[in-house]
Image (cartoon, rainbow, N blue to C red):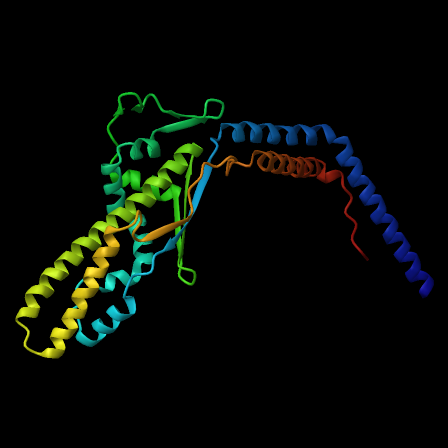
Length: 307
């Protein structure tokens, strides 16, 4: 009985070796087809990767400035409801800054105050690494006269491109904002980032100053008509806090953020990774070529089943 089992086992192994040998023979005989298919995939990948523009990424890290008197303002608000106008906004600077940068309103404001921002975003064609010059699409925008040669895109259409190129996130535990910009030109990537960082901070500074002025005007009028001593003292504290907030809005180059790691001109492209694309396509072509040869010779492969 054991001799019969050993005989069957040896026969099965021999048949498997024969099948594997036939498999390799088929692949070897079809090596030209396999190499041709892999070469076609590789060449197509080369052409595709070369047709893709280089994309560069500039990034920066921003530290959120702590609001003065934040805890005191919060306690006053909790004790007297909505009387502390304009105080609560100073406790959410980080999220406010991020949401401002992401908003359609800010994007519309940005392209209105910075006339170069919109063309840089939408009309850039490529970047000449030798001359270090950004090349605009001459059919779309006249760089010399700063004039659109076609109908200027609606800001909502531009906003889609803007959100596709800008990345921003807020790390609450560290009070750090990471922001980045991607573009076909490394120089423009940095310039877009500079404009966004500066203008968002300036806009929020202006808004908070206006709100603080409104709060001071209200509190100054209200305190004269208030007879209760406790409320008068609370309003005095609010007035002092608003004066402190106004001082913070008027001093220093930055209001909401301090620049920890400034934007830079990247030296290396972010994408495309042409080497990876070509090698991946070549490997895929090799596998497909092998499958093609095996399928073509499928009837010639002997399939053995175990007894």
